[in-house]
Length: 116
Image (tube, rainbow, N blue to C red; front, side):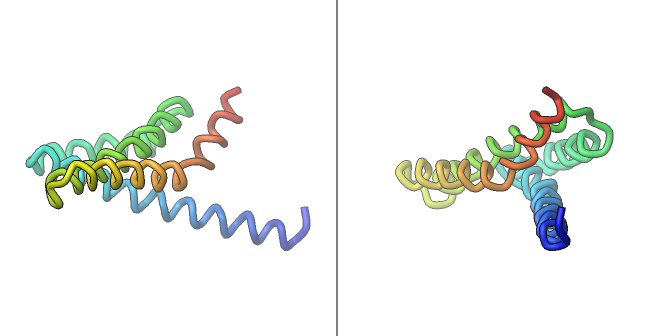
């Protein structure tokens, strides 16, 4: 592997870690807002941290799939509750799913490769 490829790979790794770190904080926030409970947000934050630190590959892959779905749910919630329009809810839910898939595609793919 050339030096240029190593640098490119390192940059991609840093970007992915940054995206994961942001999701670990944003997902519990939206869960708390959707359930109108900060206790639920706190519990979901602790569960996500425990999975991220102590989870095996199956739990790690499940966490990334849950992140993809939660981005879609967050988009739906924003469209339905804040904008109060079903069309906006569907559009933002699809947009959220695409954003979540874009952020989590490579970790899911890597975990599947490691597992099988």
